[in-house]
Image (tube, rainbow, N blue to C red; front, top):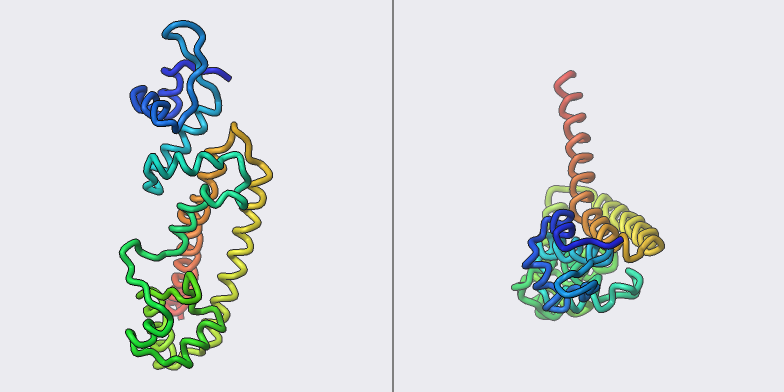
Length: 225
């Protein structure tokens, strides 16, 4: 389907000047020239504008990052690391200004029990991004485990928690596979929005609300008694 630029503006709520700027910067393909000063845009322009808008507003991507990502837009989700990079960076939960330590530096810096660290690594409760890349985030997990032990909470509960998280990650992978089979130029931005929204917004909402309901039910039953 072809659109006038005014129609693109109406459908995306992105100003004409911004759309022309995206074309100038190479984020969007050139419009089809009908005659002098008459141009037409298509569904690919529409989808890409939606994608660019989402990545800028929700993920904070720069023009250069988006341009780099769009070079691989016709690849599958699983084969295109450039497209997945902002997602992977967010999922890693490592702050940009984090201080990184080797394993030995990490144990020494936070005065940790080496045997405990090895146990947590084996049980996949401690999950550094790389084998020899630790941050304050890992230290907070070790401290949490120590607190669990200090108050006598069964360690197996933590291991069960990890197993549930791994099962969830497999379900999320299945969602990604399903999205890969549906991708085309007409739904490109929608599929990426689904991916990001599922892993961040929907996950937090569903898990937090279920925890809320469980806690509320327990409290309510205790009051009734």
